[in-house]
Length: 331
Image 1 (cartoon, rainbow, N blue to C red):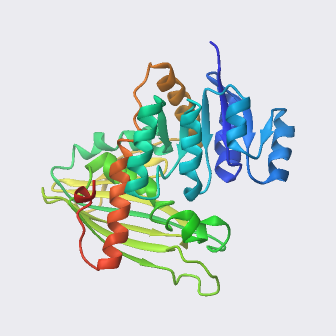
Image 2: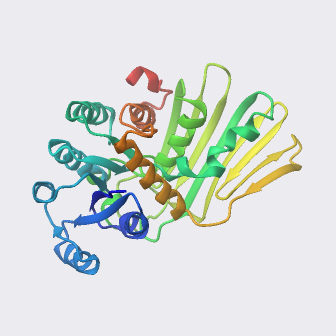
Image 3: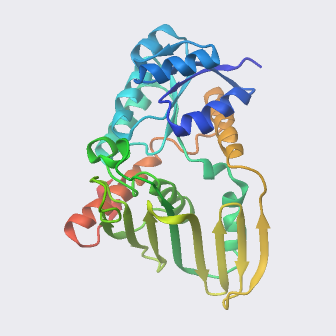
């Protein structure tokens, strides 16, 4: 099997801890080049992996004959990198979010289609059997009528780096860590008919930042299902939970565990998964290679993520208007 040549743009935590280690273990792709605007960091890792390093992605695309690139840059920088990759006909595995707003998402979707490249947004939970098996238990709880989603973590300094700056991040916990939960809402239930959001930037008064550290979103569907999404970068310990309640029981999903409960909360059955989340990243890289080869479906492509952009943008519009917004009306 001939391995695809892969580049990595953006040498932050996600690239160094997840993407690069799994690329080095992949049978389908190999790390061929790295790129980062930090000259010292770029040189350090280019030397460590004995591969070329670049500070300009345009130069990397021109010099290197790449099949794909993993893009893990600040949200605001993503568009230019994707456009550069499309110009050179290089496929893109993009760290979330796909785009910072609907207009950008629509423009990038068109760019990818016209260039004939595959773009897949990196969402590791899509490759976790616990998350994929959620509906096997959900089918046993009757008619679902309420869903509660909570994802919290404590960040030492929310003002540190580009994530604390609206101009670079495009938003806070809603568009960043919350994008994973938005994806789960759309994956499991589809795009809601209404959202109502409130956000806060007051979790750390000792730090200066203008991106939300905490968000609470109410959402609902015409068929009667409604729910809440709570996100925070200021509340520890790190927790993630999806709780779906139906007429005959409850399904509760956490990292590495999914369980079905009686209406009174008594546990009926539980499924665990041992191992690390890096396995999901490895599966994701291999799946994307197969997408490029034409043997797998792109399950997280640009057109699908127009809905994600619509959900997030509707939340921010709701904050400004202090009223419900229909995200479907924005698409």
